[in-house]
Length: 126
Image (tube, rainbow, N blue to C red; front, side, top):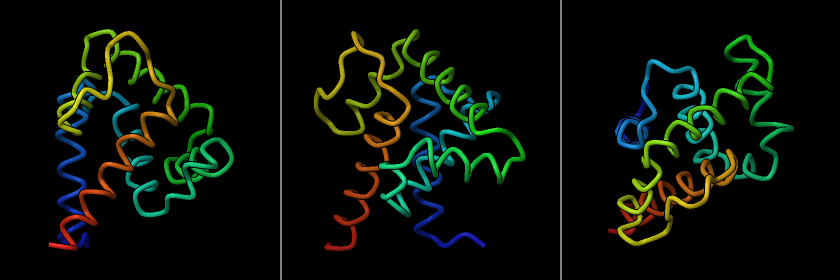
């Protein structure tokens, strides 16, 4: 059973990815959401994307780590092509990103995970 805070993060992340043009009908959506959630719970994953994060996700879904990487990269590429990555600016309420650069998988996972962690800590302090 998912805790209330975990559900809030899951729901917020789902809405964000959809707003970015990354839709649930693509495998990259599920893998990217899982990667971000794992990085939120354990930030050390951000220093070991290819060595730990992808293999752990791959194990859970019964696929190869390179499939995880490729699907996430494809999802980010789709979002980039439709201008969806500009949604990152709404997340931060500042101009963080201009659609002239496509972030790597690890950059995007890190940007979103870090913001979720900051928001969670801010809520805890309130």
